[in-house]
Length: 228
Image (tube, rainbow, N blue to C red; front, side, top):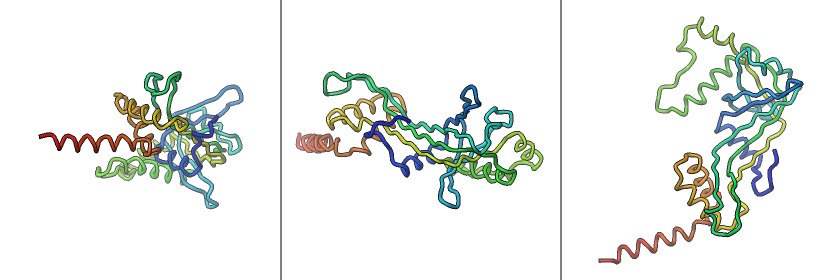
């Protein structure tokens, strides 16, 4: 992943982002062309602390036959993104751009055993069921044994040993505070959920850029209270 220095995200933050997102595009090379699939996953760690990404595929997915434990795969995890218009900057002579969050995990992939697959399926569902609290979590124990076994036979469990972690959080960090605040403000006014999320991330990353905004609000409130 090409990442200019201002946008580079450190390893710990990149892994935390990937784990929280839990959905990405896995890609491998079949000798002639890239093969990719979108899928949910979760992260864990080997005994030596090496990160691992666990997921599963349909048994007939071409990727399943490429998990030889030696070839390098890519798991690309994308977060919020938003278009930025040059008209939103305070400074002149700006160009259109796109702000985003992305993490790439690279490593070898092997198949899981049947016992490992059972753990993977339960752990993966538990991860996302936890997002739905206070709903009572779904568990595989709610299924009949025959039905569950049949579905497991239709999938292949995989684990990536993560050898490289790359993160790029492009949030206009290289811009002046005036332009930075202007862009965050403009994004917050858009109807797109991604634009709202990017605006929130920008505020969290550089709260000092919005200090004048808070001071202005305080002065406005004082003035309103003083008017009879």
